[in-house]
Length: 227
Image (cartoon, rainbow, N blue to C red; front, top):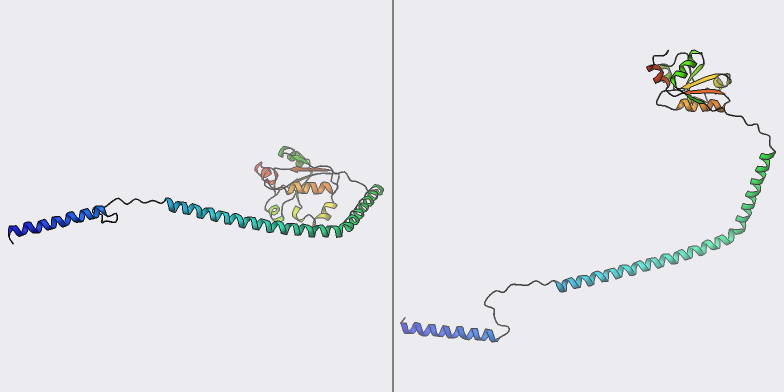
């Protein structure tokens, strides 16, 4: 190809390029030659989402108001039913109250007229180990309120076993004891049946009941007489 031909071809290409550039610039829908930065705008989407959430909130509020209205209606209907029942039973209720008051008055009159003998209960006395030992030395009766198995495993010397948990079984035994003598109840240091036994005996009429709280454990540790 000759130099002249190359120049002619280049001129044609240049003219075509210039014509294309002119057309692209003059046309708003022309082809873009260079890439432009894409800008993301979520403003419309955010606005729509806010509107949607607002709509949902309004719908939920409407549902809540409807439920509240229904409950209010049901409550009013129930109250009307209660008022009707109250009106029906009003006379019966008044009569029952009057009958109850009459019964109370009759009971009070009965109590006033009855001659009941009230027995004084002597409250048991709490004692320490030194006083318990002094009573032991004076040969007063010690009552072991623990279960039979614990008593058989070891107990204060000469003490009597009356398990509190079986007190009804031993009631005749207790009734046979003199009520004007001194008695000392005990169990182990970690139980309270000695207290229960002492108060049960006091209610039965025993006047001199002492509670040795240290019990079998403290007595044994002190080296005092045991069986």
